[in-house]
Image (tube, rainbow, N blue to C red; front, side, top):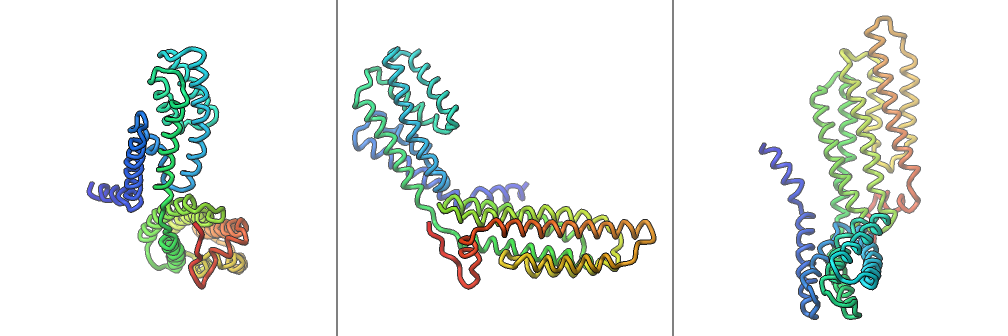
Length: 350
């Protein structure tokens, strides 16, 4: 129970969570104070607009801001049409809400409904004609709420160096896992320990993927997808390693040819970084295929099963090579120039 509680706290009580809480609180308070200062009707509701406009990342902030503005326009327009044709009673308000909901859902902007309905409530609650002042009051509410949300949300510390250390750890652990597998095929270590390392590696990748998403969504450049795509590659490689580990569990004894596969895996462990050309791994693979195809045919059922397992593992390693090749081929020249710098940490514009 204590372990679960500790894990929950580590996951939720983070610096990012604290920063988001401060942003939300600051945005709500500032928007209400400004609305009250200029004498707006329903000033506290401006805080709701700010609350619903604050997002976790810059990319989400921009995307939400655009939808909020466009949805505000059709919300006011629909409310005005219903008011002109029916009036200001409860039935008119219900019809306006129906039109707003239908329009938002059809456009795929259901996330804007909360603010739209708040505005519709204000427009009909006044129980008076849609004057220019009334519409201006709601326009100011949206401008202030979204403006404050945009400002407080735009400040996001650049944690690229911290993320890079995280990704470097992934590479080191990936290399260590391959070394573990290589040792096992030489008769060293235990699969129980390696399974534990593999589970830790999976957890590390999941954490690094969250960092990659955060970096991409806070850096408004297409090339910033590099980390996200890189960690996706590592996640796919982890899937393959887990399958290879299952194969290793079925080995009761390791044939002498396991040493060929061990050399192959150890060679991969020494060249896991993306900067290392995939041709290095392909050379190891070709050498290993040649050696393993030259071994005598099995004479017993057990020998046959063991050799089949080794060739199945070899097929899995080949899949890892294909994953790395696909990743490298998907990169742009700009991404390679920015993120494959070995002499210094690249500085990314924010």
